Every structure is written in structure tokens, then in C-alpha cells.
Image (cartoon, rainbow, N blue to C red; front, side, top):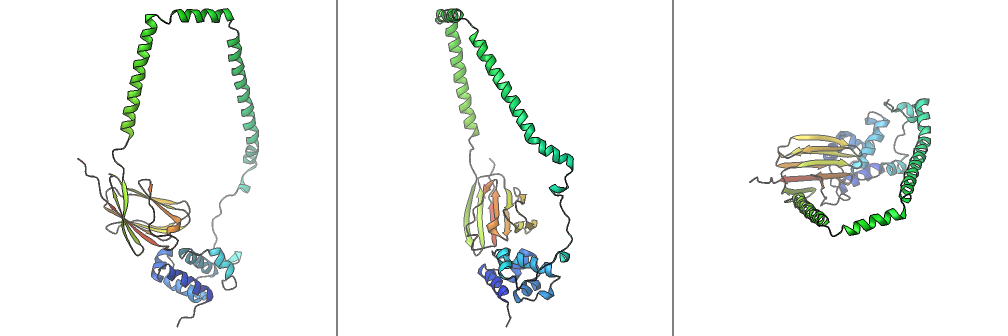
Amino acid sequence: MLQLTELGNRLREAREANGLSLDDLQEITKIQKRYLVGIEEGKYEMMPGKFYVRAFIKQYAEAVGLEPEEIFEQYKNDIPSVHNDELPQLSRVQTRKTLGPTNSKILDMLPKLFLAIFIIGAAVFIWVWFSKNMGTSTESPDQEQTESVILKEKDDSPLNKNEESTQSEETDKNEKTDIEEKEEAEPVSSQELTVLGTEGRKTTYELKNTDQFKLKVLSKGETWIDIKNGKNYSFFQGILKENESQEVDFTNEDVAEIVVGRALDTEIYVNDQKLEFVIDPNKTVRQDIVIQFVKTQTQ
């Protein structure tokens, strides 16, 4: 009979609630099964070090839908703490503090530069407006009345009638052109992405009425992904961090299979159309998505 710690028992219950075996969890997290067992049994001494104990517990919790920070806080007396000298040496990214004095001065000058540009633009606008209004006001009333009389006298001339006829014809042509462009812009058919059925954690979709199949998988948090075709050839397998994505062109394939380690933090797009999960991601962490591509027959 296995003796589980309080933390290990909670992790195991969350795993079983999601329908995951230790083999499934090993595939999702890439943590060896013996270490996963060690976490559940509280045998931390078998692991490479304290840092890896905390890292493995964090990955385990995320994979089964638990909040790692909450787990670390609640079981802080059971989980080994890590000191700075025990952490692996990682490369450091240059921070803002390392910027030279020249860059800092440029950043300080930007608000003043924008203000100067705004003032200059406002002055130019006022000058142009003032010039136009002054030019209009310099015309004498007699001149305006004379031009008005001349225009009224020429309203009935054959020249005006010809101009009106020409303008009417051009308007008709423009309207016809707009109608033709709208008709050309309307797609003849739109793709259909429908659900064929579900079985356990597997959902099968059908894609038709399109001649292309471009797949995009986007991570909104951190998730493990495996993208394969119907012949079990893997195009990508690994962890996608927050806002990372993978795109695969399945136009020449008949089937796409996507194994999602954490469905709640994963979005799938088919030709820019977002695929809706039929199985609730809050209840089933891992999901297997199969998309059957029915290619449009060319006439």
C-alpha cells in the first residue's frame, strides 16, 4: 500500500479527476514517470536537487489544472525551499538599468519633442485657415453678384445640358462598377467546420467547402502540443509558452491530429476560423482533436 503525503494525495486526486494516468502525465510534462511517483509519495531525495523538486511540482500542478502558487503556499512546510546559490546559472537579459546615459537622455527628450511638433502643427493650421478666410473676404460684393448673374444666365445653355448628361452617364457607370465589384467580392462558398462526434477526450471534426487547410495552434498560457498527420508523422511536439504559436499547412493532407496537453490555455484556428472545443476544457485538461479534410473537387 503506497504511503502518500498530503500534497501527493491532492495531486494524484486532481490527476485522476482529469482522467490522466502517470503515463499520460509523463507524455504531457516530459517528466520521467519515476519522478512523478516520487512527487506523489513525497520521496524528494530521489530527484536531482531541490530546484528540480519545485519545478516538477509546478509542472505537475499546471498539467492537472491546479494553481502552483497556491500549492506552494499551502504546502510550504512540506516542499523544500531553494536558496539563490542552489539555482542553476541562467543567462540574464539586459534590463533598462544597463542602458547608457545617451539612451536615457533621448527618452527624457521625447515628451518635449512631441510638444514642439504639436505647437508647430497648430501654428501651421491656424496660418492656413487664416489665409483662406482672408482671401475669401477680399472679394468685393459687386464681383460676387456679377458672377452670380452670369451663372444664372448660362444655366439654360446647351453646354450646361451636355455637361449634366455627361455627369449622369459617369454616375451610372460608377454605380455599375461598384455593384460589379461587390458581386466579385462576395465569396462563392464558405468553408464548413463541423463536429462529427466525441469519444472520451477525443473530438472529430470535418472541414469542407475549401481548397486549403492551414492550421494554427496558439498558447494563451503554457501548454504541451503534438501536431501530426493521419500517417502519424509529427510536424511539431513540445511546450508552447504564453503567446507562442505553431502553424502547419495541411492542404496536401487528409487528416490532422492535435494532442493538446492543456486545452484551457490553447486556441486552435483552421484557415483563421477559431475551433470551438466541444468538451469543456475546465473539466478535461488534455484533449485529442482530429480534423478530417474533405477537399473541394475542381470542375
